[in-house]
Length: 249
Image (cartoon, rainbow, N blue to C red; front, side, top):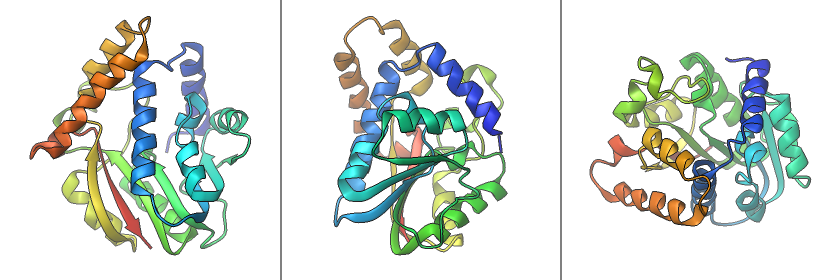
């Protein structure tokens, strides 16, 4: 697992260079829609998010989580990320901690949201540990919304071997679509739904977004959202940047 110091440095760089533009606004909106749609239903008591990078950079998904839970909690291995997110979300309870050692009692949460957290871990053993910790803190019948980088997408599968397509920070273990169900069931979760999302070609889209930062965001974001129509195509497992699942304990 990369250290808290590493993620503090990454966050400092993002804040310094103001990496909060069109692409991050687009991903924020997409994640907000995802949480609102997939976790719609009876209100929950407590909800936990397993990292807070999005909440430190922009809005993240605090608003849709707050609509379904009376208490919003969050953890991040980076103290800087946790503090920055807490300053921007004073009604939430955020703290520094790792997903592999969640500092809450057994069965404390009704819902957990884990958006591309476990794919930042360096080994599959750490991924298993993170899933086991999430299972421990979930109440019986509780739900987990989880996403991973999609290794069924060829560009994501080869990113470790082609540095020029890598992002600005470390990307760790991930899974292919066919691996997701057995991975989650091996940790005691009951699968309800597998999904894919974010189909815009990321490497190219990010570069184009940076060229258009001086223009109004809405038209570009609207065009990026058009790529989500690919979710209805038989090739969706290859074009999606992320795969995810809704599971129950």
